[in-house]
View 1: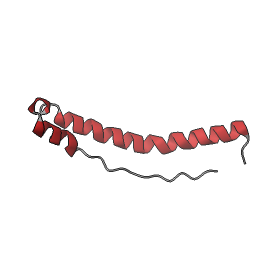
View 2: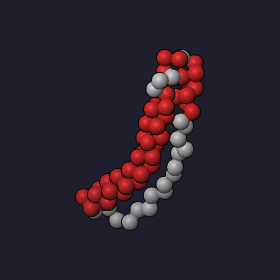
View 3: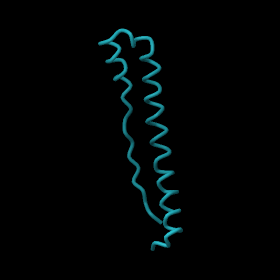
View 4: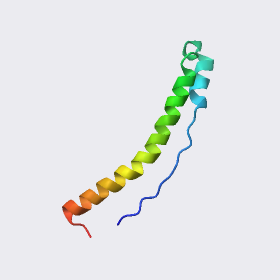
Length: 66
């Protein structure tokens, strides 16, 4: 069985706020954008190792790699 190293990348919710500070047209959606960015990072951090392990096992069984 292959071991997969899991790394977590910290979300940066301040980036949409910084853009909103420069261009005030984005100020209404900056909080929503920060939340969506954070959610995307968390979902990616959870799903990437799971899907990578599943795909590696599937490829190992298909190709009979030792």
